[in-house]
Image (spheres, rainbow, N blue to C red):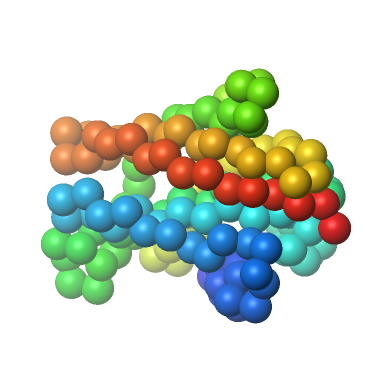
Length: 144
C-alpha cells in the first residue's frame, strides 16, 4: 500500500509544476530521498490508512534512506528529528512516523502551511555511528 503512495507521489510530481520533485542527498554509503507536498495530493484511502490529515493547509514530508553499499540498495531504519520554519520564523517541531511495508521503510511528518508559503526544513538523520547528518531544504506550498 505504501509503495502505491510513493508511486502516486512520483507520478503526481512529474505532472505538476508547482510541486518540487523528489530530491536526493548522498552521504557516504547512504542515499537520502526526500520530498514535501500538499496532503490533498494523496487519496482519502491512503490518508486514512496512514493517519494523514488531508487538508488544503497541511503538507507532508516524506524521507527514505537507502544503503548503497548493499546489493539492491535496501531501505534502512534511521532516527529522524527536525523542525520546519516559515519565513516569519514560526517554528514547528516535526513528528516523524515510521512506515514499513515489505522491504520499504519511510518516514512521514505533517506540516501546516498557508497559501504561497515557503517552509524551510532542517532535519537530523542518524543511523547508529554510521550516519549522522543534517538535511536542509525548502518547499513552497500552495492552497488549491
